[in-house]
Length: 113
Image 1 (cartoon, rainbow, N blue to C red):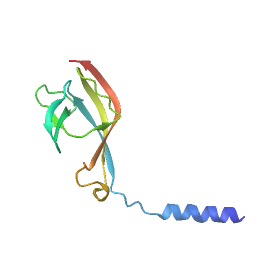
Image 2: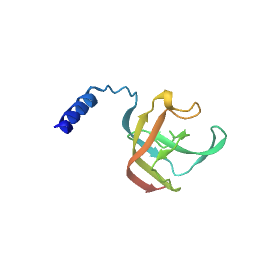
Image 3: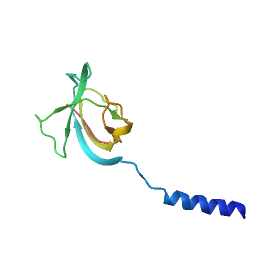
């Protein structure tokens, strides 16, 4: 009987806890170009080139200075991928880091360039 009472009190307490997280996520389509390019972030580096779009536009590439968790880039291929963009709580993100986390959900297409 004591166990049931503790269980119910715990369940009620958990249900009344308010979610104060500011994290939000959305899904989006990225095209990833077949080559990395020289770019400068904190220092010189190689960047992926991406397009955040449903349709590939041949000359509309933008440098991407971040990483996509779970994405295994292989040069020579143009990828169409489904990515989860998660806005992180700025209070928990270091000053020199992105406030958006990118995670691969699915490789939709992988075509040789």
